[in-house]
Image (tube, rainbow over all chains, first blue to last red; front, side):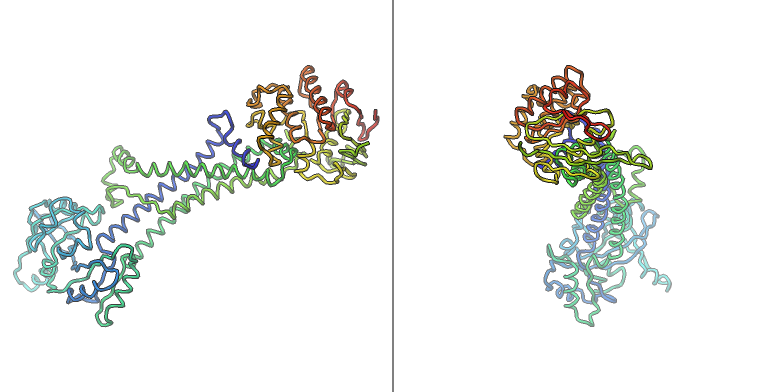
Length: 411
Length: 221
């Protein structure tokens, strides 16, 4: 081991000292900065990943829509399923209705699904909290749980459904009765906005409610594992005839603006949080500067013993690097530990502050999600290492520029 | 006579002091050969330590020439191999134990192996610190620290030892013991010694004695 590395490590971790104060403070400052970055980016990444998962879970990988309606969905479905990479497809019809139960109204989004095909594309069954998807027929519905709560509906409740078509008929003084649907399932997706405003019925019921005949609004597509959604969408578009009016879009393209905002928010957070590591690096630098002043005579001694200037510089620079390495490692462990226990921490915090409802309403999730992107981890490691190295560089340059004779004479 | 290990000719050195310069050395000549010991005495501020710094190539003269073992230049690595330095204030690395401090010159030269470790142990044994190998400097007395510094100076088998008031921080008895060791070890290994000292008794034990006054050697015995 070169002497400058040996001495750098000995000065950071001296023999016989269990708790080297300088090292502990420097390492801790870098570790806290890194842990904070891991935690914040992990949670931000978790929000992003959860939103992406939710989008893919509720929309499929690719969605095909027409400029008007898809009049012959079965023909289009057959055409879609022939395209390479497509695993399954399911038609849907959507809209907004007014529902009422025990004189409590609500205005949810409604989606008509093909019960025979839906599970191949959208894992709806895993979100059913009560009841069963198997019970869904043309006279029943599944409500999201907050929506059900808001109108006092539960399994077995019969709710009245009013559609824009009914309103049109009312305008013409026709007497129409609302459609009555039995609640056979309660849905919980885990996203507050969806959980408070979604109802599901069969495609046939939706086509009746909206007077669509056999038409649907679109087709959701699940791709085979590993197939790129954008590439698959391009293949689908190439397979449609020009006059079909059909257009396939990947889930990424549909939500491009939203996902861009999410990414921007995460990048901004990374940028801001890097200042925490920068502050830690400044602390390390100031501690190393103190060390250089304290070690001035030794710097002269090393020169007297035959050390080159660059080796003296390396000795101090490596201390910055070592603080960076150890601080980053400790920070990673601390960060991932905090990330692991994040929900317990939030639970504890909200129990004391009584803010659980507010948190759910504001952040849309009932659990704090986490997802650490390897790219983020690489950025954190490199940033912490780079800043710690730079922190060691300034004292190193000062040390290397000292004239040995002046260093030895210093008081 | 053998070629000198160090040969200084017409050394001049001055330092700035306000708007003028103080001339510390005004034409110093000195040759020291292998096995020879030379003591330099003089009043405080007479330039003894400055001269030693020039000999160690830690500072450069304003004019004049120094030749180290046949070469007019002394790069850091060669300095570490050719010269061992003993300071008044010991200058041990506080984070390293006695053995690691003695090994430092070897480590800087990039030659730490079983043989060098054995030599460090042998040197420490020679200076009477065989039982203190793993003691940190703050666990050693002043005399013990200077003995570690002495062992360190001899570690790379230098041809020349420069000792700058090595007993200056020690009591008389300990100083005597350290000086005994220094002279004995130099004689044993035929290492040339340049000793800067205020102590006339210690100076008297060297083979040649010079006095620095007003920047020049005024008496060479």
